[in-house]
Amino acid sequence: MTDRNAPAPKRLLLVHAHPDDESITTGGTIARYAAEGAEVTVVTCTLGEEGEVVGDEWAQLTADRADQLGGYRIHELGRALAALGVPAPRFLGGAGHWRDSGMAGTPSAANPRAWVNADRDEAVAALVAVIRELRPHVVVTYDPVGGYGHPDHIRVHHVVTAAVEAAGTGAYPHAGAPWDPAKLYWTVTEASALRRGIAEMTGLPDGWQRPGPDDLPCVPDEQVTTVVDVAGVLDAKRAALAAHATQVVVAPGGAQFALSNLVAQPVLEQEHYVLVRGDRGDVDGSGRERDLFAGLS
Image 1: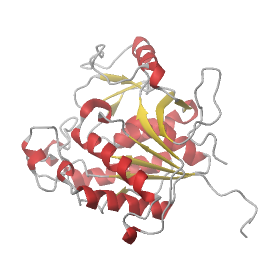
Image 2: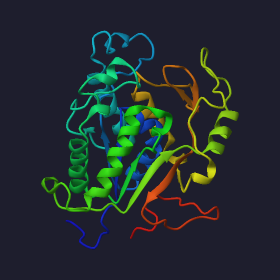
Image 3: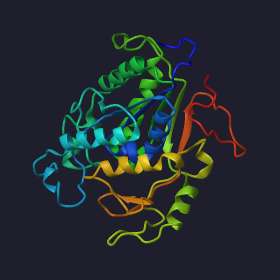
Image 4: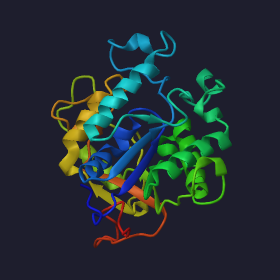
């Protein structure tokens, strides 16, 4: 029997470029809010077809060989989201509608189906339709440089920004009834937290490299508006990272992970955000929110 007096669940939408991005940058946040009963949806814009592969087992799936990596990464994403407590993958425009662009200047970036070449209105309208369907209170995506400069991440930033602005207006009338998300955040990493995580690294696996000062992206501490404590859900985040086995390897003990370049990255107990749309809610003594839904009733 439905309790009509029960509060409506919080709704969180995260928009990412490729499978594994959701786990690397926001996995703890996804797991925490899902465990707290929020309705959490992850929308992914490509299948990650141009990804580099860790190890030999799946190396022949890459774009320059069998070109089957994207399909396999759907499977990985499903397993990762299950570990985080979220329903099945959802792809913008449907699975395979837009293709991973690879890095700027590569042949893959010239593919007409590449995400960087997506028609802007088509992409924005597709995301507006998702926002109006799901009616999220909070939306999360990348900052203007896409975290580390990947063209697909930057394209996601622009599409999400435009869609959030349009969703509550009369634009794209074919895309459902207007809905205006209360808050928009960028996912980032705080510089001092990253430095501490690197300083605490010990006993890296053979062949792994300790990151240099410019190897991992971060933002100055003063830019961070919101810190989400994910210490209690790190096992779920580690399981999600491990599910992306073609892309990510988790060190024994789970304190670090690495991509195909084997540059170690710390698994931090906090995930960091910049509030760029909406009102800041309750803050701690440092002036930062501790909850993406802070200030929302």
